Length: 195
View 1: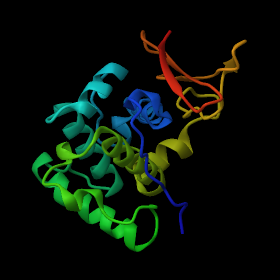
View 2: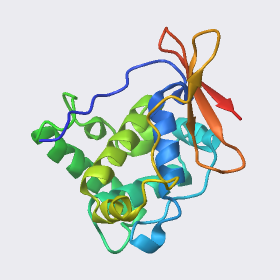
View 3: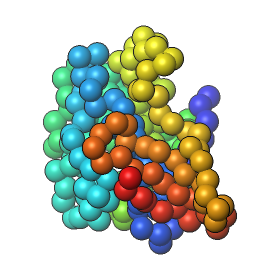
């Protein structure tokens, strides 16, 4: 059985959650591997994701959900956006039955659309979907198996340093023009920093 995944319950802005950096970094790292069979991810900046999480409708989130779900289900053809909500709800129900997520109910069961969820819950679900891609997508496994240990396609989970105020920094977003870092202080407050 896989590790249980919990939910974020916080009033902090979404960019202050480590899951925000995790989602952005995953997409940045795997965006260029469509020739390996993964469904393509849209090109976006961290502030685009932050805005999309708070909007009532978002093409960015629709595209991410469709690609993520298609990768999890190992589909050859990308799932049409109009079917994503139903399929995602089924997937979450299945994960609940196998205790792979640590929630008491499917958050999609109380809304008619993914967009009706709060930003932290949307971010939670995106995080879950990345974990499930890493566990279940044969294309993602193939990329990870064939990549060299020296390649830059590794999701960074180790801090890159700290400062005199005891803030810890993580780099994410690859080698793009607008790289970013996330600082973390002793009160578990994360701050997004453009570098």
